[in-house]
Length: 190
Image (cartoon, rainbow, N blue to C red; front, side, top):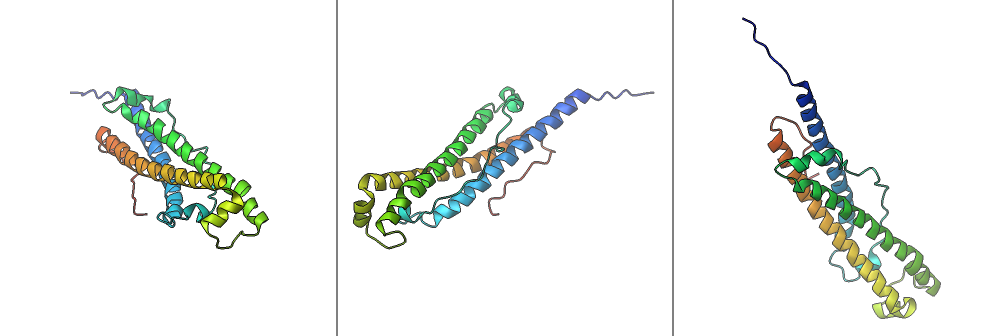
């Protein structure tokens, strides 16, 4: 007696591709989380300092152009029990872009507007009161620096938290769909 065993090669390839896409999305999220963790560690040093706008140095960002999701390939998520994950990935990408933009704008403002005024006035690298700084730089420019700094803190902390949650959600869902598969693991302790 001969038993016929048909293997659906096309279906196996699709499953393998979906697992790869989950790992790719997880890896992208982990890289974003790592970048945010670096920014957050810098910000944590001055988090509760009332003069953090003046003490926070311009933060350089790398070119993160490769940290994008292949949304078109991830469209299969629309047909699953968790279609919201696709939208979540898109939102997290936009949040990350906002973090980078906010960091860039604040850093450029500090380097191109505030620092030249401090140097011109002769108070660069000196301890001065808030009132003295306002006289030299101008209250409006100081408010711009403070607002820019507050926005950096808001966006970095918010994105750091939400990316961490999405990594866990995506990993759990990938394991739910493919229980025997290996997926990148998220370890916050490193």
